[in-house]
Image (cartoon, rainbow, N blue to C red; front, top):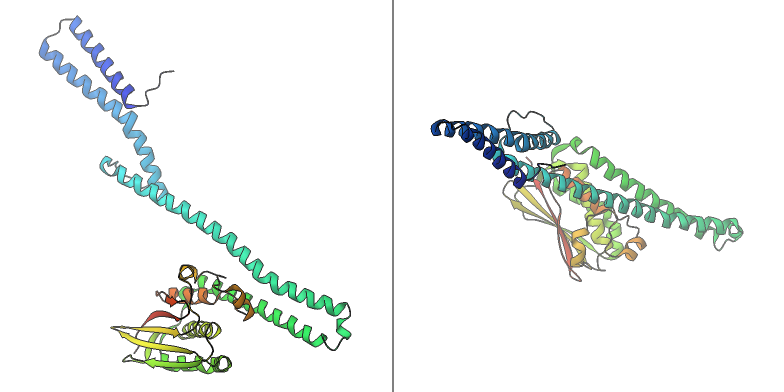
Length: 332
């Protein structure tokens, strides 16, 4: 069956019809002016019919589909001039949506795998210690308390992982519930220093505050910003060098305050910086598990600051140290 579905066939059809019409008119020896007029009217109607049925209506269906996917069916009139642009925008949007779906799917698989892996290690440890105690170790005073303490340590690690996962889940679903207020950031930093002082002393790391700003007050959710400092300073201690320094620096930035958490620790490889804030991503996996890190601390920091419409930045040099920085609006 002959289908009229491309420009050449449509052109051929129009030409044949016009030729047949002219032949019909000339066969009756009609006046030339009348012939021209009739040809003009016939050609006009024919071209309008072809364009409307073979192009306009098909494009209109596509156009309506685009509007439907955009969430509206309010299309009054088809504007040929914008069809190409809107079709390209729609195609790009669908391509981006598909790319995001694939990325989310890969992330979901990776996340489930990471959670399983992180929980599997302490679970297997607990199982091994308990099995040893059941097999007779419970009566052996040289190992019973040691294995019970190790099992308890693995339980604490599992609890920390679950707690951090719950924190991230809450941050993702309750960002609109931030308790934004003006508070003294100097006092907050000092509170965090007090909480982490013993841990820092064990490493011989000094905690210092350098305030170069004109104000001590910022706007934000005090409890969540405290958690940001806890995670960043705790990390600087975990991955610091013995007898090193962790320094909090505050700088004026017009109506904002620039906050830096800097250390002279082991530093981070350049290739790791891009993935540093992913859940469960670790630069040094062996050391992280040895010191009890969950791999979720920096992801939590990122979520909290995004809830404040801010971002966390990092610069680091391997063997020299790292600096994490973020901005908060000044308070009154």
